[in-house]
Amino acid sequence: MKDQKILLITGFPLPTVKNFILHTLSQGKPYIAMLVPQKFERLAKAFVERHNLKQNLRVVVGDVAVMHLGFSSEEYRFLLKNVTDVYHFASIYYQNTPYELVRKVNIEGTRNIIRFTKDCQNTPALNYLSTCMVFENHSGLVSEEPVKKPSFNSFLYKSRYIAESMIMAEPKIKWRIFRAPLIGGDSKSGETEKLDGFYALIYLLMLTDMKIPIPVPNRGKAPLNIIPIDYLAKAIYHISSNTESIDRIFHIVDPHPVSIETALELLSKYSGRKIDLFYPPVDIMKPFVKFNIFRKVIPSYAPLFDMLSQFIVFSHTNTDMFIKNSQIESPSFETYINPMLTFVKNSIDSRRRKGEEGIDEDPYGV
Image (cartoon, rainbow, N blue to C red; front, side, top):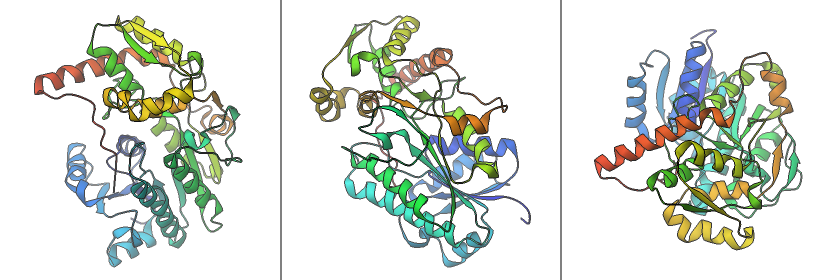
């Protein structure tokens, strides 16, 4: 393994992790140590087998939330000696996850990854996938900088802010922070493993020919910032491959987002379904979206409603600087509406054949 890059990647089985690994291995031949919670070990080995990754990927059973990442002493020493890059994607992102699990994974897990990175012999950079929702309760243009005036209603988003702050405060490590908005499926196939976020709305829309009433904050004018998962993987890989990108924050966002109103009008147009938008006051509607009827009908709508409740424009100067001339760009929303619709329709048909109903809402946990 001399002179070969050795990556430690956390977060399996999140779709972002799978997509990033497959893209990374398509660009070169690093060796990947994929940290996997024990309950996902069989799933991880099936992923390796399905994509024929045995030569370049090793499943390492562990837990970001415990000391030494849950590795054996021998395994831990080997990784400390050999890892050249760390990608920390493991996180809780589901709103209704218990407080203690969020704290354990998002905060203590990040603290343990920082300790590991700091002790590595090869001084690897810690690449952390965060969320644009660290700007909860903000409005207007927000820059690729530390959050200056944090304000949170949700401990979930606060935990990601705390994780970012811990990483940037550690003087003995190099770091990059990637903030992502809503993450969609593949830009060409529309494929996603979880029908949440904007996919939850598409799912509801495709279930019936009836006109669907949808609550939309900010009169529907707030930007819908959603990016395909393959764009996220390409951008993170490309930026993190450049040593000049160290100690910077990157907003991996759609540089030209459409409004939620326009997005829903386009969905209605391409799907042939009717949508009836209504515009309730945000303060009145939020509790219903999170805890009442909408949680039962479309349980994953809450994160989308949260983002659209704020009129935020995300600066992407750092990202633009490092991906220019790379042919990596976020496709326009309208170019992948049909793939999303087709994928959701096929998913509904498949579930009906199997007698399944509803949207999976199990959070990632370790």
